[in-house]
Length: 293
Length: 247
Image (cartoon, rainbow over all chains, first blue to last red; front, top):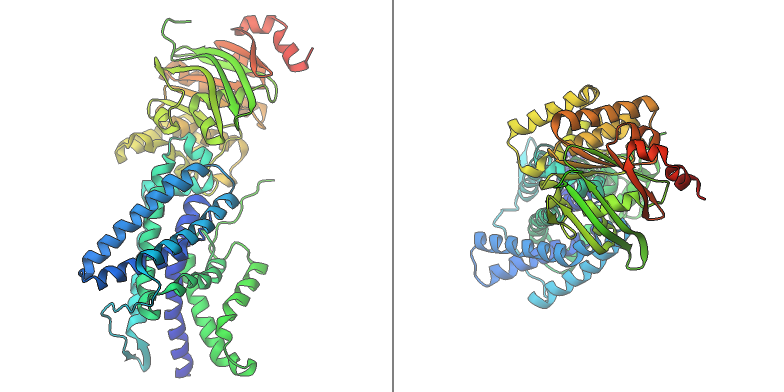
């Protein structure tokens, strides 16, 4: 039984790492109704920039601040040269634009900083330690704490602040948002900036785990089932979705895996997501389409 | 009309996607403290005219190809919508366009942010709106998407009023609503004009109701103005009827 719990807790903690990536998607989706395909490249770009600055012997905090500034500039460029031209276009047009962006950002990241793998040490000891008879990873606990605080801050931001409410208004109906005097350009800049910040945090944690390299941008694929289960519009959903994915893939691997020849944790989340789509297309916490009859 | 109109439009022409001519030779004026209506059938160019004034036409790939729009004596052909709202010119879109996933109160709040008011000022403004539309106070926590059509229209108008406007462009307020609700909404418009100095430019298909509350009216037909005058004059000339029925 204690083995079961150890797998469960390990899975839950790993799931939080997926949540971190998923939050970036939700931010932009909530503020513009667009699935931002470039989120993965933003994670890669920020992590690569940060590591490269570290390697050029900038201190940790300065590298962090500089990377954040660079992400803000990137957000500004994206707003100015891509989004602004596409106001009020259909979501699929915007989606295609982000698809294009993802290639540009990836290419930019690698031509600036090179394509080799960089190690990243955040200075967190990853030796497992024992709590109530369970072996836990210190790094995973740290990641969970970071994700947890991000969720609380962002939920407050979206529900209590003026900018947050305005952002939700824009996602709901951009034309009406314009009509009531909301400055779309300013808001998009803010939300892409915040998504850049979340991307940076995710990039650092994932980079520390996998090494900073091109495949970091593929981590986002694991965020997809998280989003489908949690719902595209809910930050709480990201966390719950991440926990479900993390726990179920690890448990499935250990307890169902042997019957299927192992390695099922790679595809199990997608099957789970598909089942969710059949039963609850908006996800657990997603906003359902409102249709009046 | 008075010497210095709030809004004055001279011979504007609006083109969508660089080729589609929507309206041409539109000239009209809205005096301070008045309700002016823009009457006409479907597709006669009412919405386009309003969006040209509020600047929203640019967001729909339209442009003002010719003519001049003056608001408070200043040319605003290229002003961004949020700048105009800041100067007291706000549009209520056709079909209400409430933020469906926001509560009624949040909908209203979004309209009030433009002047960056203090929390107390914002709440006072909110109370004003609940004063005009007592019904909204009862449903303030519900998601706007789940409220009735009449309530949504009230949310849309209330949201625009949150910015403390001088001139409200109102597009088809009667659309899809029960006659009693329409009457209620026009009564509020009248009250705002008489007691709060808010002017309205109302685009309406329902000419019968609009004319009863209107100081001056313009009739639009196929993208140009075919008649104008006081409500009484419009009622008497056959032009309005002809524009609806074709000739």
